Length: 490
Ligand code: BG6
Image 1 (cartoon, rainbow, N blue to C red):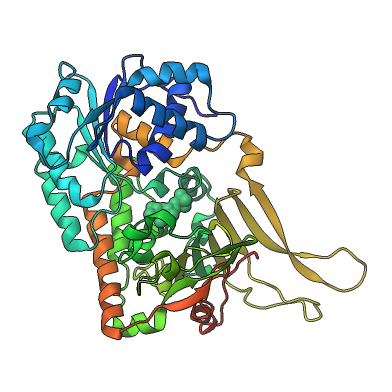
Image 2 (image 1 turned 135 degrees about the horizontal axis):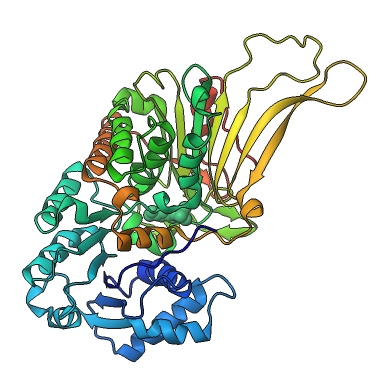
């Protein structure tokens, strides 16, 4: 396991500190990093929220949430009694800046520490909270601010947020989270591409037929239905997670891992995405919405049932074909799909290499299938390369694909840290390389806005799909029309 280095003493102030993200992701991630000894004894975690809550009530709710959200066996009474000493609760309304006395008092006298404000709130509060921090004199040289996605709902709202936060913090103090960038296997994509010489000569149009990106979830929208309705899968997943995966996959080799070296290469990919017009939207995108069905043996409700019968054309599934207009990728289709309530939870990138130019096996029993490189992001993280092999036997040539399979969990034999553990440590260390720069977020929104306009112009409908399936039939047809198919393992 990589060496775990301690971070400088910090004060971490979490707005939305009693919310779902803080309880389910941030506090468990901080608990793990603390348990591994990376925090100094003085470092503190201060949760801020609108409601009144005593310190005891707050600690009781964190304890309950850690007990239910940490992987089995990870909660430890002895460690909890030391971790809880770092935690405190302050009441603060994001908008009422003149009533932030409790926040000001909590931070007073520690201006020399790394000071992180984590905004685990709705994005419409980002500008107000940044302004409140500045107005109360809480922004120091060592301050950083972390913004959770979604950063707006289109390019203009993203710009508004970026301007408001940019008035209070310098760009290098702003950490815009896309938690996919903290996933071990997403980072492994960098290792695969740039720590091996094998792939680079093949990573281009001359060798690759097409690439498929799948981020499938089996859960529905559940308790987030209020947020999700009117947002949809394109804004919730494609604008950020999928486009970031595309960028890391397709970018040119950066000169180093320096924050700007990587982000400069990613933005070039975003700027090379071919815009999707209304005509393209009709032909090259699919919108779906789940209906009632069964997922892993359990009957589940449809999206509209979760909305209590309210009508909605929000998509819970999207599939699309994108093109990157540059020398490396011109003519190589990238097929993306993501959706909720699909057959199972799995995310992967599948690279299909080109067919052999000529087959010398005329009597083969099976066709020579193209090589596939499958990069499994979750679960069961690993890499699989399928190659053609001859079946043993004295007869002719019976060929079939066999796979060279690397499972990271088996190879490294350790727990995979949650993405938030990595990302929080990067914030505390002051390394923004794994976070999105302002220009990246805005370029991604510009491309997404084009699709949404295309959908509106083309009056593109959502097509139903049964929960537990792989999405609407149009998703398969998107590839079928090009003589291709999704490589899914049922
Ligand atoms: C979030 C989306 O960013 O990512 C959710 O808002 C989605 O809708 C989640 O469920 C998926 O993350 P993961 O890590 O479970 O793949």
